[in-house]
Length: 135
Image 1 (cartoon, rainbow, N blue to C red):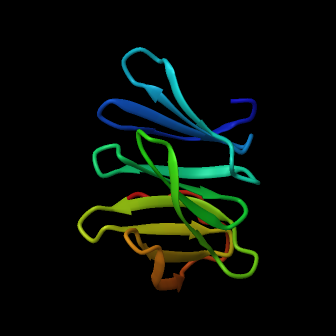
Image 2: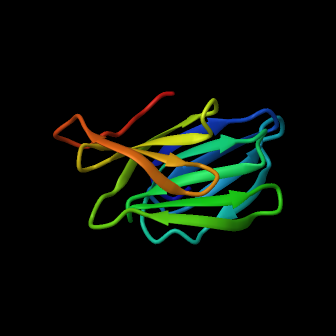
């Protein structure tokens, strides 16, 4: 990465990282060999999650967008854009409900259905940016 690394996710065979340089990278966990570089984000990538046995990669960006890629074929399969000016800062995957808890700079937590990328719940519990979530 050319910018600050903002998050690292460790899967069973791979490691994924994201950065303020607007990229997401996927690495072989055992050899540290770079495997994939995603460059289609237009602003800093703040958070990411590996799900479904490392076959799906989800990233949240400062442009207020969640992007989903299929691995290992590296295909962008879906996006979700938050209305207005919110920026995605933190994200946690909840496997029991196949959903994402997303922290925004507005102090809002949004729950997104990971299969259909639609917002199913939201609440404001903080007055400032929510930069990290753990599920």
